[in-house]
Length: 473
Image (tube, rainbow, N blue to C red; front, side, top):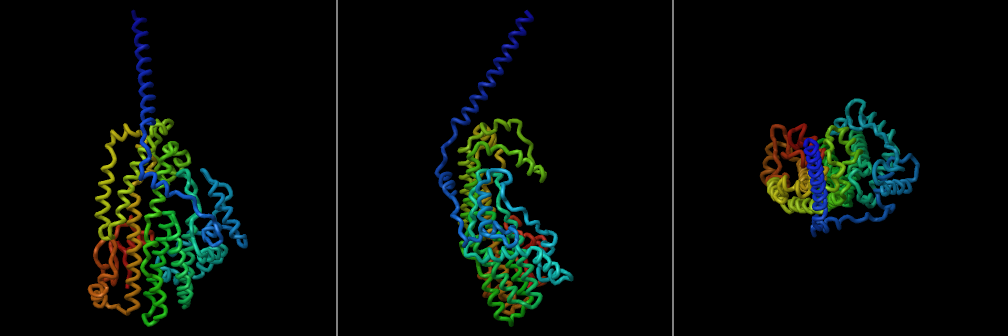
């Protein structure tokens, strides 16, 4: 009798195991067999992923790829070989890349703001000369790159999220050397030399931001232009309004950005298209060991789910991508709002985008692995970068106001207040609010409040020091 009960218990357990197995297989089949078709919105977004144009010697991007090459090495052939290395890269570190330039960041970043005052400090002029001499080959290539007729990024869209990207930090290094070089010229009394350096920076980054489909490069261009504008404001504070030729060139530099220079829509769309492309591949739902190592190094590595091995089969790619694209398109419509309505508009659109997603339990049934989708599907990204577009435009407007006031000789608190309340009321509006730039007569500053999220690194530096984006007059 006891043996009979044991046999029944074993059979019952086997039946349960078989039932669980059948249910699991059925669930996997259901998840995979009932996926959606790609929506029209998704197909339209993915159509934006095109191959880059062929390289030419007119494109400064080739020179950019060769910035770390040894002195006297042929720039164009090396740039082409670097482009080929990126094109062939599939994962990990691609072969054939030039070694890192090894920039002395401690010296390079000693002057983060107020370049003229910083370089005037004891010993700093010699330090700048040392930097320019030590990295002479890099500095010369950077200058040649700036003068090329175009700057169009040529690295194709990566196939996997962990693809290596070009060393865009080299642009930041070159820009910092340019600012330090301009400060040397200005402090030595060579204002024309300082202006020439600044004009080259403005021209290059305006060219870069209009020729790129890379959102990262667009944001770098915003930051470098903001930094250049702040340097222009610093020069204006140290120049007499009587120097009309100087102010004429300075006012031309800090002109209003064009629509093409400001617009981030194309870059955001390409970025979202790349994310959608990643999300369509089941294997990408798993975080690779290399990615986990990177996340662990910065202390944000999530625990691997116990079902990691089967996660690609618990994921409905088209369903997840269609939802992501629909939510992204809702957030992208914030671009149609004026800057003054941006903040309130973002909240309304975010509510609409959230409403498209099913509840957590139903989402778990529809696509279980989408709960661990590697944070790829940030549908709110379009709004964040459109906000940065407004923040960039606002900082440029603020500098333009400061340069105008200095140029016009409007310097007393009473004169500035009258000008902002009268003839300048509609010309110098602050971002995110429908009002003229704020004026603080005690600190003798003009400025505007903002959220750090919507400012470039230069704007965030201003906010951390002053509590808002503000310039001394």
